[in-house]
Length: 421
Image (cartoon, rainbow, N blue to C red; front, side, top):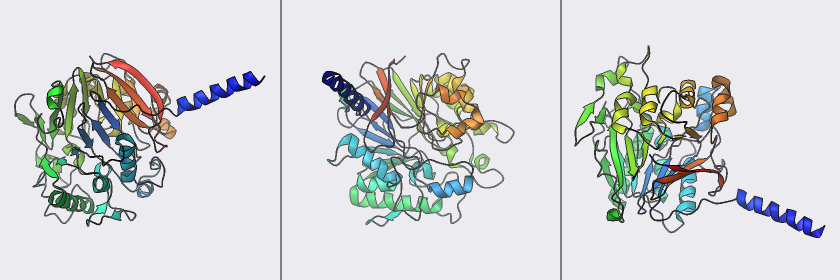
């Protein structure tokens, strides 16, 4: 009897330990892509094969304000819990991942000026000793040094309108944008942060800093920013739309169409991410609004991708999904209208692309199924969590789903290995 009890106890302990399994540490030669779920927008953190680091976006916004304005839609709690802000949750994640010995972000890429990508000024937003408010990007950068910052239009900020002299917003939240400028100026002057404009077509803006010669098969290619798309060779670009088209009759515009996009290659592995770029043409949207269709052949087939605009209904059109043909799809989602019903149907379609897609969402609420039915949820590999892609030197890769409700890097599920084609 005693042996039986001990045996059962051992099984329970083993099951508990397995449930608490932590993400294995990054090793030299790995490419890690962490889609960090704060419940308040996009944040992707990458560790390149030589240890160079990069962050793409760090969003934050007022969840209660959003819920009041857009009810019955709503957003989740802040992850891991409401004692955090989105910025402090990202800081915690990086310290758990990299250790407390002064982690650094070698590159920060801001895709566009929307709060769920860089932060908004809220009543609860603290103020740095350096004079700027703490939200999203600025909160992260106040604690963890950013060595190089890149956005779509530094330093002039004059497309499609002059953001520096405007006193009335036409497309950005001016308090948040002004706060960003304070942050950039302070970090540039006092901490030698390099600040640059995104160079469309370049593969030299985001490079390996530690051992570049050891990984000649690694590359970050800049594909698109503002209204410019790389033409596929040299420094040639294609203009997708004019400022007048973007501003339209109202004189207002959406920052979504300004989003930067990059492709990251490591051997045969290829990954796309492009902020909130759109891909819809209908009775309310003219042809220029479809950025995805001309971008698709420039990007080409990928192994994995982060869906444009959080999987919203105005992106991930059939052409884009068919050409990129990813095996692994990540939706950096945070609202009950993610995904759009049309996007969910495309992702499940057997007539788009050459293979069944494995879809991972950082947040999916059961109420979303009221609009798109139960089939999409049943097909998901993850309905919530931090989604980590780990790429190995031989081109194989795994996907880890980490528990976003815990303040450590606890694995909930793991998938793979996948083979890069």
